[in-house]
Image (tube, rainbow, N blue to C red; front, top):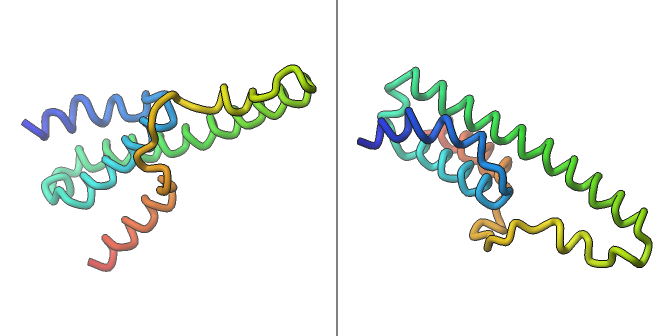
Length: 118
């Protein structure tokens, strides 16, 4: 049952995704579920949990990205020539980003705007 997956798995694990690429995929998939599944909007408890998970995930990705950028900049400054490629090595998940051209925050805002005009 898809509702069971949405209730017990999706909303609990979405904010716990640690890799950037997977987190982005989770955000996009959650927004698509919200946009395409009217049953979610009829279940206020599930809707609230999904929106909370989505917001928590968006906020955590922003904080992590900022911290990661600070860390990488610090390594580059400290290492001089000794850490060439630090940004390249430490900034990737090792996964192909199927949504490379999508900014998850922009995607959320645009999707909600379309929803409000529907």
